[in-house]
Image 1: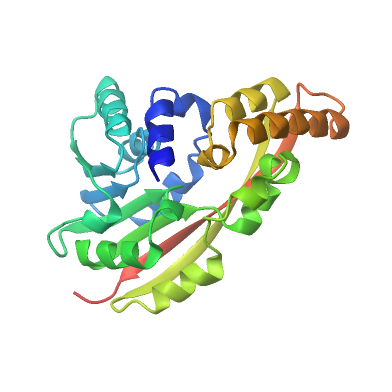
Image 2: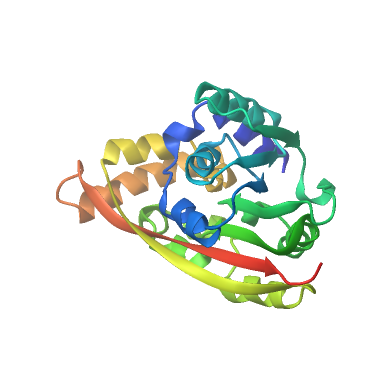
Amino acid sequence: MANLHEHFSTVAKVYRDLRNTDAAPIRFIRDQLAGLASIRAADVGCGEGRYDLLLFRHLPNLHLTCIDVNPEMLEQLSAYLAANGIRDFETAASGVEELEFEDGSLDCVFTFNAVHHFDFPAFIGKARDATRQGGGIFIYTRTPSQNAETIWGRYFPGFLDKETRLYHLADMKRWVEATDGVRLATAKRFRYPRVASLDRLLAQAQGKHYSTFCLYSPREFETALEGFEDNIRRDFDDPGRVAWRDGNVMLKVQRTEA
């Protein structure tokens, strides 16, 4: 955990440049919340705010509490949203275990590409208590099978062995079903065609754009990085145009009891 905290502190200033940010899940949320004149929400594991800016651009009269355990990420988020003219937000440095909201005070809770860092059942319980009856919990993540389809899962040596934190969809569904007062409304899958140069991919890996890379020792990482480059050059005729597809899933969980 200390190593991961140090990782996110180190990458906070460049994280937006290293990661892909997709608008499709935000449009899905917008459509699910159509009809609400204003929205009070929280984003748990918000990072440096790349999805939060999209939320503000797509949701009407949004007030957002942005929560992350890492203060450096929250500093970046505050500067980023303020630079884009966003003021109706607040930040809180907290882990899932320490989350405190007035019961039923929120219309919805979001988390993007972060739930694998949480105790999933604990998160669902906290988010349930925070949302009003009929409110939604939106969980955007990738499963182990989707991870295996990424360029990293297919070509970066050891990546799938190192990344053991991701939750299977069946387990997430089971945990939701075991939690009183909520139901799984939908599980929406997303597929994204990607194209990047080998140089870009190497820069992302060297920048540790996935925390998975922190699970390698320095020697392991350098050896794996060389193997990744060899694998890409072997299987792609043009290293300037490496193509693949990424997958994610969005769970919408609805609070059914006040």
